[in-house]
Image (cartoon, rainbow, N blue to C red; front, top):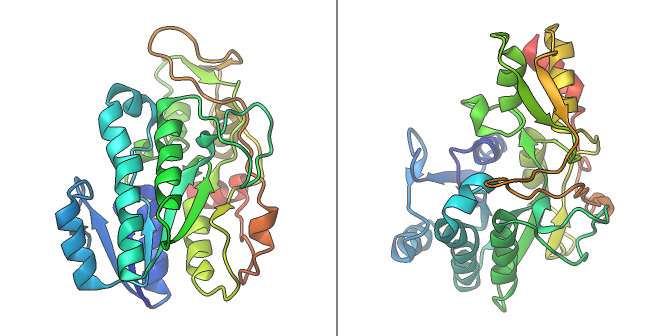
Length: 296
């Protein structure tokens, strides 16, 4: 099977690329700013460039991981976020119809407002900030192409193997815990998150491509363990045996100039996904267990 992975230099994309390679598929990873080694440089915002590459490779599946995933960055450059998170997926869906491949669009729990979890795939979306809105617009764009074979996979905050801790909103908390310089950090103890391992997501996607049953247009994949970022820091401190008095819990919602609105609890309901008949089920790692093995 021929597979294209976009955003293949990112934390999720690199895990997905590795998983499909390990499974023996004919796979190519695409990147732009960090296209090195085996990753081909393609600017997804240039439609002609994308059309030529896809028409030549003729994929069976495309896993679209590329996105502006940082809410704070999206707020600073809304046009760029909208272009990458909404317009590009719409174009890939049009290509899906033309070239007859299945497109998996990776979306986010931030399409919801966090007021009434858990959210099913059919729950009404109501994003609170520009990042969530741009990803919601991407969902609308791909679903709006009649005749395209499209699957939207919503995931929450991700962690896992990464070139730099700053590549993941979870991994970077390791740097906070390990900073014993005397600097103090206010850490979010307001929003509940469900950190999900990119290795698990990647394995699930490989197994999803073998499902014979009809796959719904929107599915959810998520870890089941709830944490605030402060609680994640405590978990890392416990694993590493480090003090954590320099990390101050902040139970208030983000406010003030420059603060990006974040939902309280966007838990994704995953029963429909578990019932799809994917071999091996969801295959979720346990957060503390995975990090204990990774860090020791």
